[in-house]
Length: 302
Image (cartoon, rainbow, N blue to C red; front, side, top):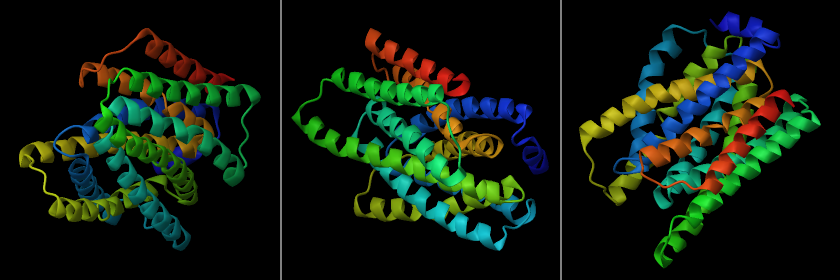
């Protein structure tokens, strides 16, 4: 399977497969965000998810895929640290703010930074029409966050917490750009892309859960063990689909394009916010979603 991905990289068939994987990742990531946000505590949710996907990935890393080369270990270490910081920021944002406010801010920050970083790291260039699509997509996502905020009817206590939530969401977006760039470099460095994925997932089970456990011991939150375990297993399976798909897409095609197109996840996230979290939607929010979709079209075909 890894050989097939490598062989398709840079070909028209590879570009088509990359687009399919990115859209699949976008849908899965919106579901993943809802799994992480819900339940007793986002920190516990993320810890359970990481433990589950780490345990699932370990046999694959040890016994199925080729072992990482010397250089790849360095990039795995860098990616491991960046992902821990990203997970801390994301969990903090989810804890402090509404899903439909913090999620768009986090996702809207990433495409612009990633597209610029991809030009510097990979020598990629986007056409003017594609840059217009990235700008339209990001601005529409930020506008959606603003409209969601206006509709929230927050009191003074909520507004105080929201400042911290917005800061954490913005930092989450920067870390999205950082891990997308570093992970894309790592997966291209690996002879078999599944080596990088398996080891990164396995290592992910060893970091954030410790932080979440220490935090929980200082400030215990009641939770249902069965519900948390179910959330962990489901989240792990969704994470394989979401993160694995986007990383394979960056191996097949341009990193900047993949990062921008993945942010169509906000369309799915808005639907989840309305259907699951019972959050209202307005005409202006629908207009912002249409602009996100138009921006994605420009990124792909501009």
